[in-house]
Length: 173
Image 1 (cartoon, rainbow, N blue to C red):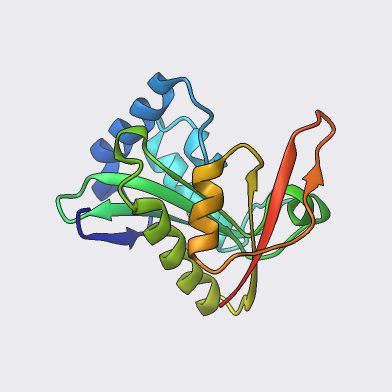
Image 2: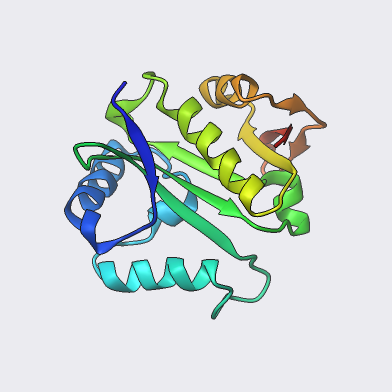
């Protein structure tokens, strides 16, 4: 595993971020966290949206403020992304949680997800969130292991309208 750090979204990483986004899109997999699914063709606009969301500016109704970070290696390759929600709505309490994270397909199973979640938990502590909810779909064994490796304590699962079962875990920071 390469040495990595969390970086705020920045124009500095534009080319690497677009490569990260395109790799994920071409894989055909669902993109997680949701912020990565935003089309980066207006890169500056995307960065502005993310920063406004963190600063509680122009947040759509029924949304909560959130902070987004990119997991970046020392050679500036964007490895993953995390979105940290500062509060929870009823929907987020059931099936979204405080933290959504994802690793680009070619960098999985190398320990990056565990590292990314650990680093994100440090950021939640800085935000004053002492009990963090992290969720994953029941069939996402890799994510469940990542959450458990970071101290996740299982809570009651939630069944979505389509029958998908979301496993819920609490982590104290």
